[in-house]
Amino acid sequence: MISSIDQMVAALENAAVLSTDPVDEPFFDATSVIRTGRPGHPHININSELLAVAFELHGPTHLA
Image 1 (cartoon, rainbow, N blue to C red):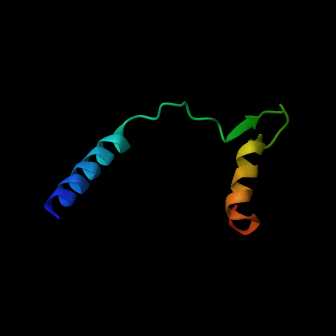
Image 2 (image 1 turned 180 degrees about the vertical axis):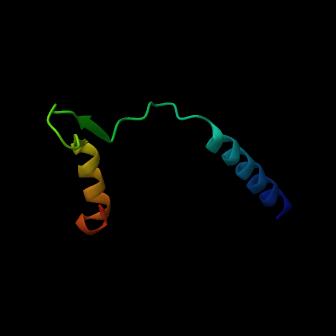
């Protein structure tokens, strides 16, 4: 039992260190701003791949 607790504590300490490491992959842009040159707010384009994944994971009621 003591061995199992020691292993669990070591795993938790390792997980804490790993969670503070920076992400290896660069972040991608979820949205982009499209300026039309016309009056008013610019258009906001949502990344379609991100939107598709979010739709699969949460469905249409949770996308907001």
